[in-house]
Image (cartoon, rainbow, N blue to C red; front, side):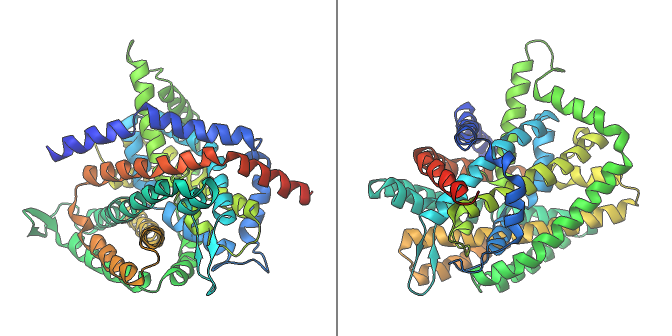
Length: 463
């Protein structure tokens, strides 16, 4: 009954209206900035690793990007892609890429506005993000919209991307590796759980607690080390898989494109197949790269920079790395090996793809993916704690007691995360994502004139 209600809500909020709004916003912003995400990608990648010497903020531009990437590169890249392809077919990957291409313009706009409208206190503490560019950009009369965004931002962190999905992904991977047959179980809240899952959940909660209690600077330091390391390891193994199966790539690409446009669907079912592929691909794409969601600009606002456009360019590289690079590799691996059509779900799909496609034994492949997933999901948990804390700061007027209490509540959510089913946690995350995205997309459209003016001014000064 509960699953049915959640699915009904998910189908409604992720219906045609929101899909069109997300795509239309990305397309509109892309047109207004003249396909900046393609023309200036090289410059953006250069800015990504080159910090400003005299920029104002709490962390370096690279640190801010790593904080944002720590929240975006997570289970969405491993489990989310698999879930999308299993539910919507290989065509879901195509629509994920389309959404990401236009989403780069959306992410650019978010980063730009975050820096332009942020506030910096006398003690150097930075506050910024959609709630501030709504209030300071659109005007005080729109502050209610900023509060709605902040409320749902807290919910996404506490009950969506930030905790349940990540923890569930980690503990499932650990359980599948150490106790695949569920031979050693313990009964909790009316269900049997693998002891490996329970122990992993406890250890994870402890490590999360040790980092989040230290605040943004500790999160940024941990992210700057783990994010590049984990991304390189995962990409290397995906590349090995693709190289070993290079002859199968053209057929996989054809299958993806045909699936995106319902070519193989039965007569009369093509439209339904297209809509399903679009729905799952775009929803999981947003889950993974968070373009339009409004989360990344919260981290971007803390960057040590004086140029809103510069940070916007750095921010958009996050979507490029997350979806265009990492999600594409995961999706191709799953389609090439046929793992999406074997009756599996969640992390088991990607694990099977690695086992089928890599020239190593099954145990080693499962171990590699488990380690990648643990690092990916762990940093996402850290990044979303920062996001949701900033949302609470805005709602509570920087009430430090409320923030400290929230950190403990967040750690508790990590602790209970393993005890939800895979389908439940992903549907809950989808719902909160949609409710968080709507206020942010309204603000981006309303402030598009500011985005264009700032962009023209920056490039005129930096010819």
